[in-house]
Amino acid sequence: MRVLVVGAGYWGPNIVRNLLEFPEVESIGISDLDASKAQKLVQRYPRTHVAESAPAVFSDRYDVAFIVTPVHTHADLARAALDAGLHVMVEKPLTRTSDEAKDLIARAEQADRRLMVGHVFHYKPEVRALAELAKSGELGKIRYMDSVRVNLGLFRPDVNVMWDLAPHDLTIFEAVLGGRMPKRVAAVGASHVPHPTSPQETMVHLSLDYGDGLMGHVHVNWYSPLKQRLMVVAGDKKMAVYDDINTAEPIKVYDRGTYDPEQDTPAYPSLRTGHTFIPNIRQEEPLKLQIREFFNAIKEGRAPETDGHSGLRVIRILETAMRSLKEDGRFVEVA
Ligand SMILES: NC(=O)c1ccc[n+]([C@@H]2O[C@H](COP(=O)([O-])OP(=O)(O)OC[C@H]3O[C@@H](n4cnc5c(N)ncnc54)[C@H](O)[C@@H]3O)[C@@H](O)[C@H]2O)c1
Image (cartoon, rainbow, N blue to C red; front, top):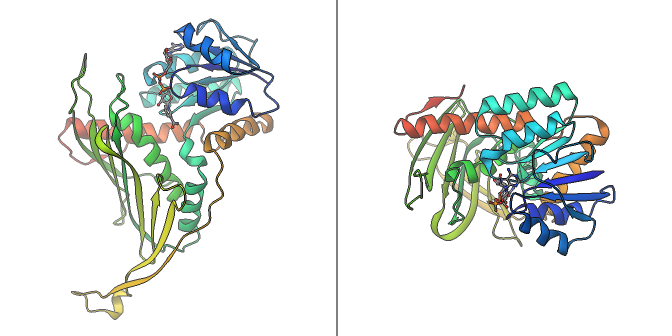
């Protein structure tokens, strides 16, 4: 397989490093507007070469393209790669608008090419374990999911913090809920850091209403003294806490909650504090699992697990949240 990686900034080198572990990868072309960045990677890794600039680089000299550039370039680059007959993996978020995402999905279908979005958390063993806990019924009926994803920077000029970080939380929510979409979304946010051109929110609180009392909540922030990656998935039987910073014990399952409300007085349900269970999770780099899934989907001629539709679902939520942000946090129906 002749692979092309477009974008050799922060994330591109991680893709290249993982690609080198796949025996089916014959060669890796690296293309960046800043040729010195591509050159630097080529000096570090075997089987790589500097490729010309996009979109001229998309041709039958390559079979597969990884688009690892800023979000505002995704749609144009992915479209050109698909039109040149390549299978395409686009980093998250897939595009800036749902119309652009729909266009890419249609082009990929028409050309019979695979289109994948880099929803890397879908492939995290911890997220698979959380999804399994929910699916097996161990947590009971899911009541809410609360997620905090904050740190200092890395500030992106072309999107706000929600478009940058919340795709991860939305991907995890989707995995835990087996693909269920929220019915309504509300978001409030603020910009706390001066921006050279137009102010972008550096902090957003996003609320997701799935109906039937199930709520999701995401707090993303680029202006925090601490790096936190903490999620609570609360069911009516047990509650799971996923701390992505704690690599030794990332998931804890608490047998805590209330007793059967039918046996309690309605005003004062008694509390249950049982054992805490720590599942053993076999670590594997999610980016490697993501690339393996992409290559398997190409070989088997099927849609990858995180296909264009998966990317589109996340964008529909983010677009709805943008409307809410502009309307002072009002709940808006997801179209
Ligand atoms: N999955 C993850 O956990 C994860 C983590 C970080 C970034 N990302 C995603 O990866 C993408 C890139 O992020 P980054 O942090 O590497 O950004 P970055 O700004 O560090 O790097 C982007 C690179 O793309 C190059 N570039 C810009 N336009 C180009 C074009 N038209 N053709 C060729 N090269 C071009 C830039 O010169 C730069 O080197 C974004 O979509 C981001 O959301 C994903």
